[in-house]
Image: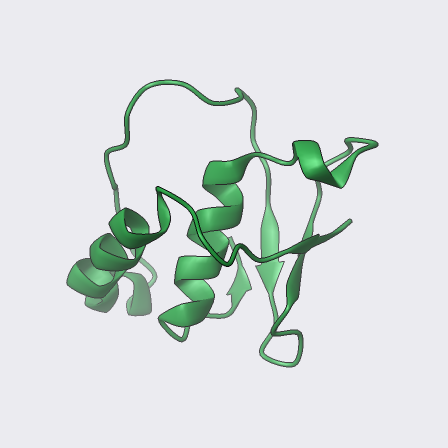
Length: 89
């Protein structure tokens, strides 16, 4: 499913800062952790960011309503794009 990136989110600055601070680890294929407040949806979603699609990304999410897509995942996908990362996560 194609999901739009966020233009604003309370999580965006937190994720962007964390990615910028730990970007070398990501570039080396390592996992990073960014702590956020408890809450949100449970489950696992894989996303794919492509440099040619700057307004939306692909996700393996099976929901019927794209407005119900997890906000934290939209925010982290946006932060990854804004920090110059692409690929599957």
